[in-house]
View 1: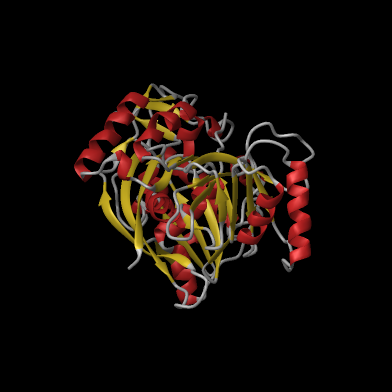
View 2: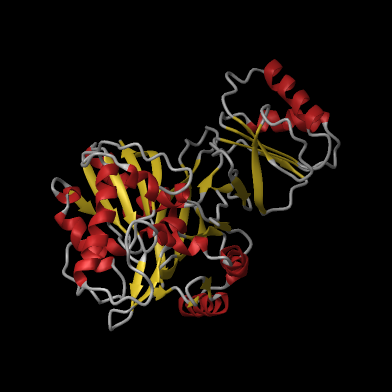
Length: 440
């Protein structure tokens, strides 16, 4: 009989805040006389919260106290205890990640997720989680088609290019439904700084539907450039988030999720939500983005939170090694072994990528190098090849008996990422890899 983990997903977005709880069932896929191969075999959503407007204090500050109250109430409705949660992710997305107290909000909410949860933000991971939460990867795998998934929220559009079910590229544009907000009378209450120089709308102006259409068409044209349906201009570079390579890509199908996706195939009054989202959705439907095959995700507004709750965790290989480790480990920075010349006073995960065939002499030599280099503190190692137990034992033979040592395998780490490791599940360890990126 398999084991299971209870996973939480919290998505604090520009427009909305949501929570889900899901059960991740773990099974051994190997035969009776083989090395165990633990996999997450099934993901079952057991609770979905209401979709709440993200509480703000003014235009720039997330109201952490109200946000905490919302999440506490949802835990009560779900009948869940914080200590019963094993894994999951808190995601702060879009414009909300630019709020000056975003980091404080992450820490404020982290205790709602039991002993093992990742507090994370960053467009690469958001793109992956949204695409998986919407089912775009499964659609690509099933049909064999290349899919460009666009998760269009309040502040940003997270993009993922998917080939044969694998996400091969991610990106992010400052395109979203809450970049301009207005009251019931049409008086503008907020204009995002990313629109500076791109439109003449200011706080206090009275906006018309025609002006909203003009802004929406401008934003849609940038999305069209991403999928090579319109010639690339400086606009695309202006709206790309920092670090995003927005070279146009070709895709067979465009897939949509996010709050704006709910407005693509249905008519929503333009003032319905006090922002440009309904018109932005309408203009997407009329644009080149939908001139050929397109699909709405299995989940639209809930795609990212489902990705966070169901797809943020993975399992290590089963041949792990650890001694003197107190789980969970949280927010351990990743450093590529052999490249960084800096001395690290704090614990880090040393990432070892392409090691080649792990014969005894090579493993022993690598263990010597690790012990000579990491002279004090815990030794955390992550290797892609299935060799963690052999390497961990070799390091333990050469290190002091009381040193904490952890070696995991079959995990590919991202540059400038952080890693969390939870309590063992059978012979494997639950792992979450994430970035902690908050925009200024």
